[in-house]
Length: 59
Image 1 (cartoon, helix red, strand yellow):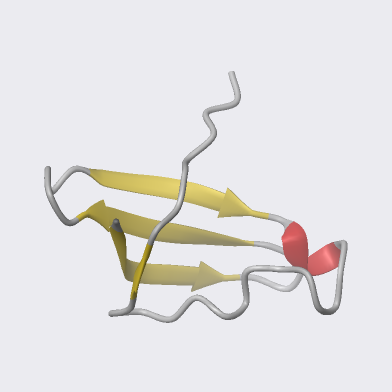
Image 2 (tube, rainbow, N blue to C red; image 1 turned 135 degrees about the horizontal axis):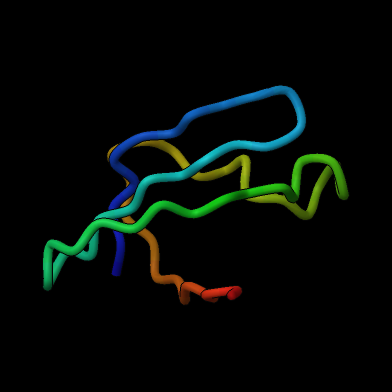
């Protein structure tokens, strides 16, 4: 479970900052879904809310 601690919005993408509620480890996630879909994106995520999610690391 992760809590959204901050969101840095831009026109076509954003960075979402998450904190694992168990380990307290913070992650920065790049969200580019805004430019791909009007209804299938992550705009529902709000600061202070908690979500079950998996983080994909692309290297």
